[in-house]
Length: 471
Image 1: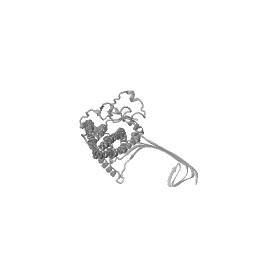
Image 2 (image 1 turned 90 degrees about the horizontal axis):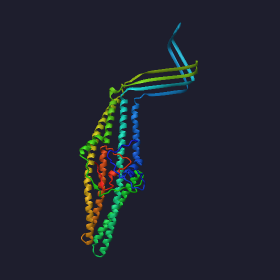
Image 3 (image 1 turned 45 degrees about the horizontal axis):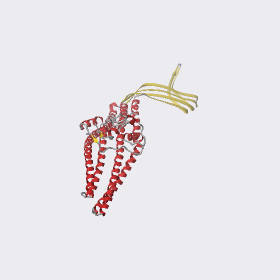
Image 4 (image 1 turned 90 degrees about the vertical axis):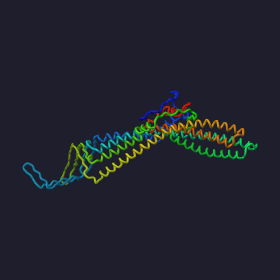
């Protein structure tokens, strides 16, 4: 089975031996391994693979329309035959006769016969259109297979990051809950000592209850994501390689959006499939033109038929042998308006296809711009959130110290805790969004978004201090 080689995933693993080593269930799952597992068990991908294999047979079907067709039949059995001929004339040396009657009769005789027929199309516009459509269908099957491989990459990333983000959300909320619980215990002690007002207890308790609700919702989201991942890959995501949210991010250098939109216009798989659909509709119109209707074929026939037995006039046998080779011309003269209305229908469907193609091209252009813009926006968002994360950590330290000294209120400390947790989650989501935008942009321009069995995560999931961006 042909797998389209990636054109943009530059493998950068530290050791080739580590890359080639077999995976074990105990090892953390990364994005590459997620793709490998899904490729083996995802039923949707397997269905697409079967559809691709089926589609490849259509090109051969198209070629077969111009090859000779040969058919044969044979008959054996028991039958009866009776024939009467009146008003015949025959002559023979020395005598002749008019108004002669010939009769034959066979009852329960042995019947045997065979026939062999051959037809070789020479001129047939409908066959020509159908064969072209079958070849186009095979091309579309190839494009759909490429699309299925791209979709598998995107789905792998979505399932992987859904679990990763959901687990991080649960971890952050659990950590925050533990911190707020510690604050609540401290506030109670200081309230009993008369150092804090009752409002501090109410504020902390309210925050605890809010966190409990948020944590319950986050655990539900995590359970859903884990079940979806397990269905997708056939393996429970026991441990995933995490994202380094504080990793340095290089500025995206992806050029002008017009370049990507032009690449999408020329190479987008959906647009290529739509263009093939327009060609199929054009062939439907061409096949139904009136001056293309006649068909010319080379035909041949060999036949033998025999019935042997006895009847009213004694023993009898009827036997016929024939053969012929020639050309056959067929011209539809009147079809009750069927062909003309089919031609009109085909013309309207062609107009529909063309309009849908324009609409799809506009949609792809918008999606390409959105993905391109999303890379820039999420890079800016990511760098801003990294600064905010650092600032919120310092803010929390200062607020904790101020709370201990009595300079900050309980609400201010809780607000600082919430701000840091929220920034951490937003930072992870921005990092994931940046990666997904890169994948989506490459998919939109038909950039060979398919993987090999080695090292996908090296370029998309940071393993050191630098997250690599599309270039």
